[in-house]
Image 1 (cartoon, one colour):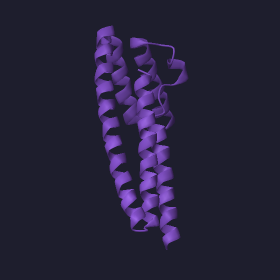
Image 2 (image 1 turned 135 degrees about the horizontal axis):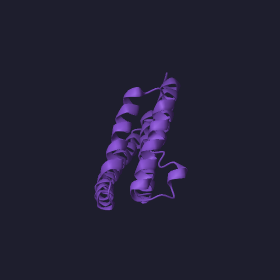
Image 3 (image 1 turned 30 degrees about the horizontal axis):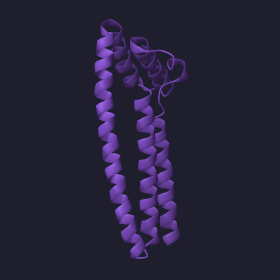
Image 4 (image 1 turned 45 degrees about the horizontal axis):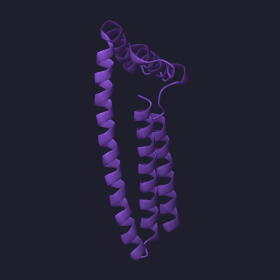
Length: 144
């Protein structure tokens, strides 16, 4: 039973890590050399391609509308303002993840003291997930 629980936690962690990695995959390589509005347009076009590959018509339509809006209204100052807003949001997410990590570390120490290996593993995985999330957020922020 204990081994099954650990395997279930490990499987859930692996799935979550995949989702986190996929959601923070970052900018496609062909957009990396672009800046400002050109980069924003390139990124939206890349997202449209992904949504089309997954037959997500709702997402495709939303992204096409966003692309039309960006092409019509994008300016250097609007990109700068959006980037500053995004960086502030990323900073908040990093702070939240660090707080969650500290809480999990504290709980892990209590579990160690109680000899609860299953809980220790659970909190170790949670800490690793938060570390990965922080790393991806910092990469995302650095790429702006």
